[in-house]
Image (cartoon, rainbow, N blue to C red; front, top):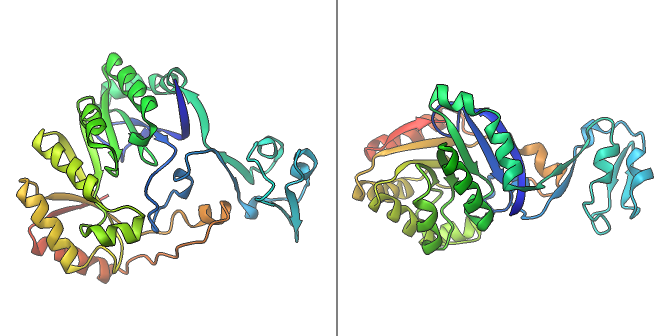
Length: 296
């Protein structure tokens, strides 16, 4: 059983308790304009080209079997209409200007990496976190990873946007100890406009987690003028309070993924981070509705 993994981050401290290994599975049904990992959205391996690292040696042009490498000025870019993402140019590049995002791996291959830090999980109360993209979209591959982790006794965390067929989500729910659950926007029409899908199934699955009394952290990627409005925060507070929950993790807007859009030849969404006073005002709105905020 295999799937596409685009990163495995060891010694993570941001994706659950203790020291963890976070396995990022490639592919996401949402297309959030603020996504800081645009390489996570496609379900296929993708070639990324960082032009600032290109030294103009031409090794990529010489090895490309499709003639897809084209010289533009002093750098060697590519013709995406011809490029097949075969990755040969990645292996030939001496300056690491080319990178393949996404690698097909088996459950056993992933778990070998996860197992290598098991001592740290034991000593820190950590474990393994599966994220994405959207990990539930990996289907049987995720189930295989969960089963392998359970057999090893690892603490399991799932970082999810909640877009998953409810029956399948309930099966996954029973195998996970902690959920990091994204809450992007409460209005279904606005959610669809922003991400491509409404939030009906998302809220159904979040409701199921509350009903099952699963451990979870609500995570809000906070975007100026998009989901930090009085109306949206009030709706979020009403939903969470109804389920006896008043704590959220806030991830303020940033530009860390800026270079990745160019590397994928995608239009940069140009999200503008908060000024300190703007973020303070947004956080006051959460406090007004009795929501306790942790910035992560």
